Length: 331
Image 1 (cartoon, rainbow, N blue to C red):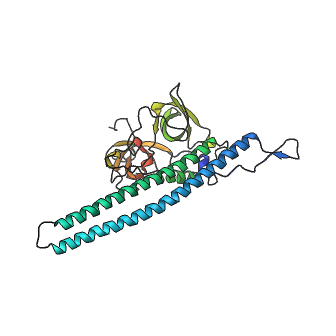
Image 2: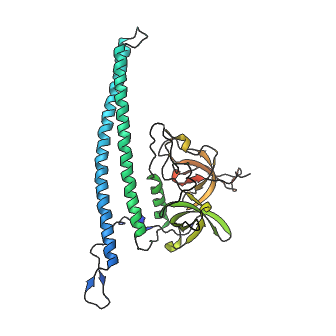
Image 3: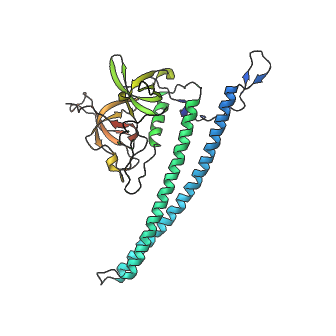
């Protein structure tokens, strides 16, 4: 159940965006040095990516300040609403009706509070878009890099997987809006194709056994309708598999908010595939308790014949690593 020593893509390194500018390649003839066209192209691309990221971070910084200002204004309006209710109750203890004055005053305050909340939500969505774009640029730079994948210790790998789960964006629905595919338990569309760099659950055969592993998409062949994926935990990063679409399950790209979109979560007793803690393998499990707050994990019961009832004690697994299981429940 515990995979071999891990290797992670180079996106795990802190110096992922270290520029190639100024690096030279020594000629075989000795003396001089010159920059190859390939290195020059990589340097230009890296510099452009760094510039774009700096611009995005500056915009994000400004958005965060706007969000804080808008939140402060919203809290001020909510305080006014609360005080107005208190005054109304004190002045109308002997009356059963709300006077026109208070009706109009409260109507105006509530309208303003709703407008403030909508503006704050819109600013939050813009901020999330900036963060998503930064992550996308970093991922593209990693995929375009010709550096070999470094081998990471298991502890580092597990920390990176946990961090990926914690930083998964939270879907913020607009009023009346349904969560999109790949939000929490929402499945991908039938024609969905995962992009290079996306993390997926892949069903692979090893030593005559089939297992669901955490893998990274390398590419998708439209003509054969098959994916090339790399085992996230393979030695030297060289364990590649070519698999049909039915053997691939994309992981969620947004967390579902239990407070606003509970229908986008797996319910109690649902059969799922979940990443077993401290491994890179998915196993069948039952949902013991779904998340109650946006940052909560699922509590799941893994199938385990070493226990009398056939299931392990409850274990916590992040939304990022809980996906649908189409197999029948164990008898």
